[in-house]
Length: 175
Ligand SMILES: Cc1cc2nc3c(=O)[nH]c(=O)nc-3n(C[C@H](O)[C@H](O)[C@H](O)COP(=O)(O)O)c2cc1C
Image (cartoon, rainbow, N blue to C red):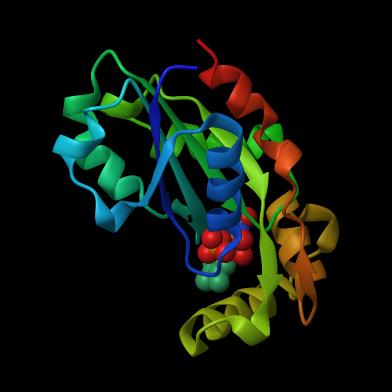
């Protein structure tokens, strides 16, 4: 496999776990997004961003958008990490909404992360509680998969991280 760079942004550690597993599997160099700039990223033929999903945004995507003009003709991929179970339709919707313009041809992969309200910042925990309270007023049969997962996770501590989630991305990164 030719040399690539793994860029990640992780608040609670799940995305970092995937970045470490991907580093072991590929031998690519690995950095947090805030430790690199466009000049560094463009030295590589393959660029992978890994970021947690937060209220439907992907951490670190802002950095990838900034460096996108320098990555023309490179193999670029995004791997996002969320609490919901894998759902093809939902992933396609996230891709359509977030990977636009210069990132339109970039494939989006998914790995399931973790959920631990005790470890969350006060603001994150409050946000999740507000969302859970508003979802509790809805009919559960109308929930999207991420809504059902959020309601199931309430008060639970779960870690769904699994290195096999990286297999499709590793296959894509092969020469
Ligand atoms: C405030 C907040 C918002 C979140 N929003 C989503 C979401 O929209 N979809 C999802 O699947 N997971 C969501 N999650 C769960 C995180 O994506 C999940 O915990 C992931 O493992 C975090 O990655 P990290 O450990 O690298 O920070 C949210 C978590 C928090 C705290």
